[in-house]
Image (tube, rainbow, N blue to C red; front, side, top):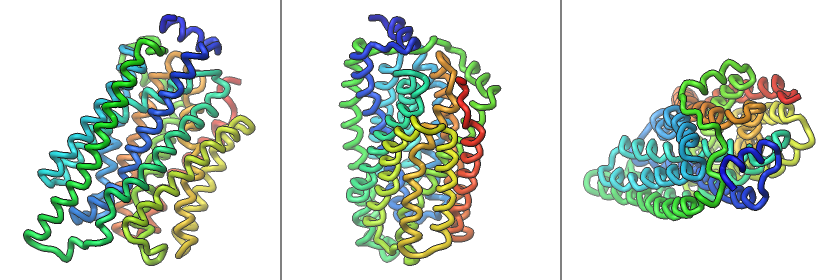
Length: 427
């Protein structure tokens, strides 16, 4: 069966079952991988903040370096898919991720914060390619009417990765932060400590590089056995911009900007927020492990959301989730102790349906332009590069609690879009 035949059968909602089942397994694995890699930033931020004595705004440059790649690489990634197909593009993305992970080794050797940012940027380029592959592909594997549910279900595997990675990362990367305060060291003792702690980071990412190469080889081996192209082959990088003339799509892209910015801002501050005496007062490792509850809530919510989105209008579900997230932010900012701590962690549960629902609502009816739409929407993920530093600056100027006003504004925009898009574009 040729790629064109597969594409035609998919468009007619008559997919070749065997191929689609195998392809779905690979897509679920890709969601797991890029989710886990991305959530490790939440563990890396407190580590680098401590090692290099950074302010919150400076530490948030970790997210800026990472998510800037989405703005620069998303449209090229969609063009890459059009030229070589989904599976080949996925393999290239995985290899690029491995290169980024390997760059943590020289970054640790030179001991410069900027070197870590460069490594993160390269890693994120690979993540961008993999994500641009995954979202439209899972959306196309079945009837358009149930794409919201299907994308949400696939995103649950993304959340599985974001749940597992912070817990393991906290043990591997943050364990020593609770034992040594670099402010108490000086001279050769401080230099030795910084070198050893940087090596902890590089060893973790070197292991990830090896694993990513193995997965890339597995994907590459399947390039001739699985559908490798479901797009029209359009190679004009400016053609995707015409999609912004569609209000529903443009508003959806703006909401992806807001959602990723809000989700990443909260995740980035979680460890430090839970370390405060006014909340749980945890040490760094224990606080880092609790980040898994934030992402775990998103995982559980996506499995639940996959069912809810079949029973209720996706736009209304999205609006309700955003309103609850705002209420939880208000609780975290105004309360103390366990109430504040669990309020901010519970936001993850209501984040669960947001990205996949916004993506599916924005892309309804795009058809063969799904890859273009995915590339353009993934550009909007640059919100993760812009909103977190603003939140960090707010934290430096006030408190961590008050800085949550920034993501709250983002959720308000999302709630508005949910109500705006409550009726299907296919009706």
